[in-house]
Image (cartoon, rainbow, N blue to C red; front, side):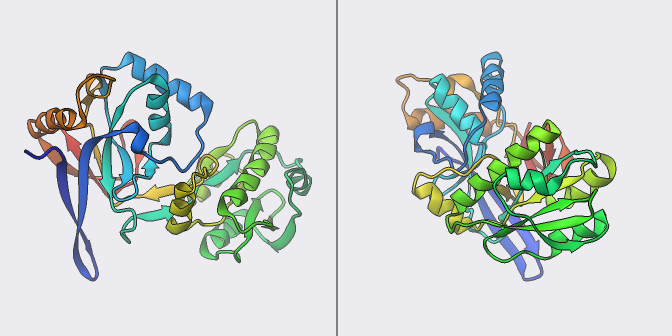
Length: 302
């Protein structure tokens, strides 16, 4: 009997129809490889949520071959700390071209009297003016044209300036660590760091009072997986894997995740049978459920 629940999703693009294999199963938390640091406050919030629940709602997303976690770092870390042995995962081939690796933009609501060049210098960088212009034009320009390797940008919409900053390192983990230092320096001025997708930067500028944006360099999948294999951790919010599809509401009973004499095969046999008894249906994505899900399609268990 199968112990892995399969989903075969078809993606249509100009070159034809392409199958994308998804698999849902329970996996040992010790086999999973994290690639980002976790935030202590987020871990405590999740631990409290797990203590109140009898079910684990949504599977984390994992690369099938390497077992590197693509989405769900904090949930893995929380279960490890709480002594759980297993976690529900949705495996996918992360190297599939339809799985994209994007970045999170660091956003700040600062007053116009904040001296951005001074803050940048306090964060450990030397700002160089790349161009000047109106805020919306600078935001669009940053999204359209990528800076050379080893550089990233800071947009100051109040000053009407986009700065180019150099990073003196070839190690992508160290590059993001240095940018994290600037992020925290800006956070002292603004009170918080907000994170936005590139497509939402303009909305944040127009509707949410965001004035300053740190646009970090793009990472490649190869860089992320190489760092994970070496045991290195990027800073929080370094990666944003964008999937063509996601499965949700597996509602795995917590007892299947706990320490017990039940082995991997028996846990997954029960898990598979529970999922088989439920109806699976596909809906269009880009919807708000418990948060915003931007995947084009979602598979939901009823």
